[in-house]
Image (cartoon, rainbow, N blue to C red; front, side):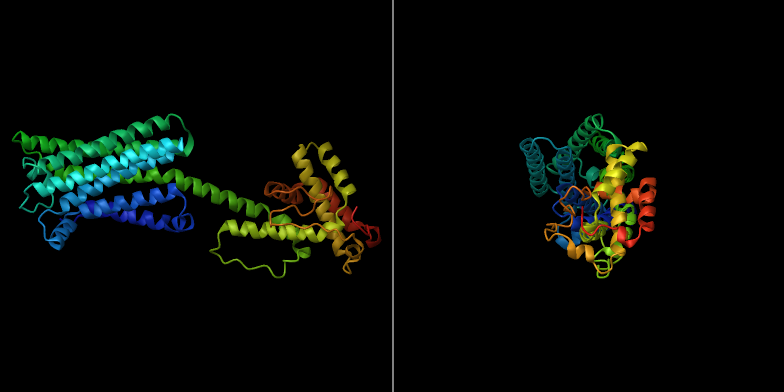
Length: 414
């Protein structure tokens, strides 16, 4: 009785919880993530304490024969309640209705847990049974009722989970639907586990012996069902997290051309805080956007509204949509301003500019408040950055700026 069938899913749940641990620490206030992690922890505890070696150790430690039986049954009941509450909150709805339904499930299974302990205390189970407690004591008064109660509570949870997840899966699409259908598949295995247990117990009531269904078949079904359900719970969250991370990295990468274009004139370029390799990508994007806005602030006196207007007209004539045309015009004005600033190392234009320079209250504010300022927002910055690399309008503006003599640049912002 090495308990491999039980310890393998327990270790799997522990590994999954370790993987989700950093996300949980970063987003502790996220109720959905917290519920999923709690459910995985509870699943691991159920399998760990249901393993025959653990059962023997717990019985010895507590000094009560078969004390592990009500402990495992209580953990299973708490696990069932946790699954139901998670689905209720995951699906959402009116807050009061969600709280009321969750409260009912919690109270209901709380009553079941208390009843399990009371029935065990009233019953008589003097012979330690590590694997076949359910069938060995199937006819024992009070213990029999305890066994039927915990199996019935699990059956109610299994049917309710399949009904709720099945109905919800018909209303959604994508990875959420896939996750819900996987949960349904897991609970089909759970129902098969309960069927094997009930069949073995009923056979005992009728003088038969189908104990192998309870001791050999049921644990394997429970293990498979729990792991399938865990995948279903984690898949939508994992995919969402992976998608968000990929989108953020994509934004960081696509901001690269604009960030490099402005690096020579950014006041932060030489003293930016170096990011460690484990720094969150969201922080990297924030720093890159801040550097870009700082660079644009320093270029404000060199922005040329007429150049921007010509570039905008050229982009529209070339077939760009209005948003793309604005981004190309902004990028053309920025690249011309960078070269104008490089051609004015003494800062004559800055000295002669009017003193009412723009300010920004945060790293995401607009770099300037005049009609010549580039449009604001992370999406606009990405469009500008891509235009720097791809737009022929920007390439033409860059070439013209490189060929203009120093005296042709304006002495103040237009």
